[in-house]
Amino acid sequence: MKLDQTIDRVDVHAVALPTIRSFGVAGGSVAVAGRPSIRVLVKVSADGVHGWGEATPIPAWTYETAESIFTTITRYLAPAIIGQPVWQLDGISRVFDRTINRGFSIGAPLAKSAVDVALHDLIGRALGVSLGTLWGQRRHERIELAWIVSGQTPAEVADCVREGIDHGYRSFKVKIGLHDERTDLNVVRAVREIAPEAPLWVDANQAYTVDEALRIARRLEEFDVFAFEQPLPANDVVGQRRLRAASPLPVALDESLRHPSDLATFVKLDAVDVAVAKVQRSGGLTLSRRLCQLAEDCGVRLLGSGLTDSDIGLAASLHLFSAHGIGGPADLNGRQFISSPYATGITVEDGRAQVPTGPGLGIEVDEAVVQELSIEL
Image (cartoon, rainbow, N blue to C red; front, side, top):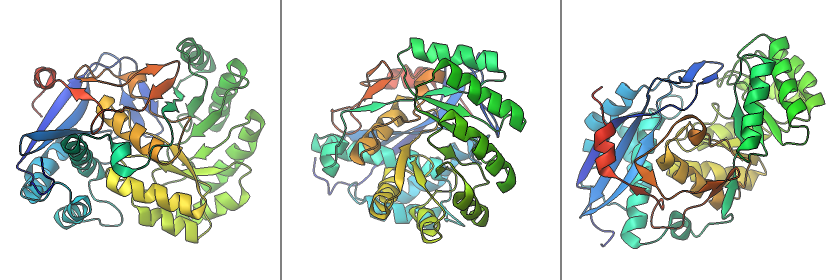
């Protein structure tokens, strides 16, 4: 296939995936055991070659729902890119912004990410090379993953940590902000008691004020926490600057960093220690690569995270993190909470994920299984 071919078809599927265990963050529930987890899959085709992308609707984390993602792609993004050259990723990103405007930051990043990732997969498949080869960037062959801890009581947390250890995980990320400050600290203490030497960081998902975050940070220092992720509301730029200046812990930004320009703002204000790379939050691989490169150029440390993706999203994240030297521990927790029976090609052993080497994302998607799992929204 020649890369001057144009996009001729975009197919969108909402699928219901089996949920393995429940998962909550400060904003609310992410996954509930016994209730299907909905993902929106996108297949972009050009001249008989196709690529796959995924969106992970989590209304407790961001404003996009399965319904809004589905209609944003089918009614707006897909019609806008039909006829566009498949290689023109930068141009398509600008088409996205004209179609669904940025506003303060990226507009509809999860929907845009699904299409952008599918285009990357399509280009890699058309050329017969992996994304790492396409980019000329592949620094890691394996990415260490973190086991996610999101419990209600210290005893429940201890059981979760032991389960992670039994699965071969050696690093842990703890969700806090779900309780009062004392309970949050007891949860972290319980993790540290079970895993005294493990790399450990905490994620508050915007739960605190500046004063609360400072109190928590000073107490967390005794547990040898290496990063305090997103303690403040995403748009509290002034508060983040105050917190970063006084916190004994490195402060990592996630929800605050939608667009690369967001990171530029925090860098200019000397208000960020660590930038979290997250494919879907940043609207796909095109902008995520820009954000990661900016962080590297500015000397800002990078951490890797995801959105409880199925293996399509997992593959995209592995390629991004490998390209920018994010060897882990990374919060790519999809397999801890959901199953993705339509995708094959990724190996995870003892808490480490092999970066795929096949064309595009390096995974295979069984479209018959996608059809079986598809639902009406």
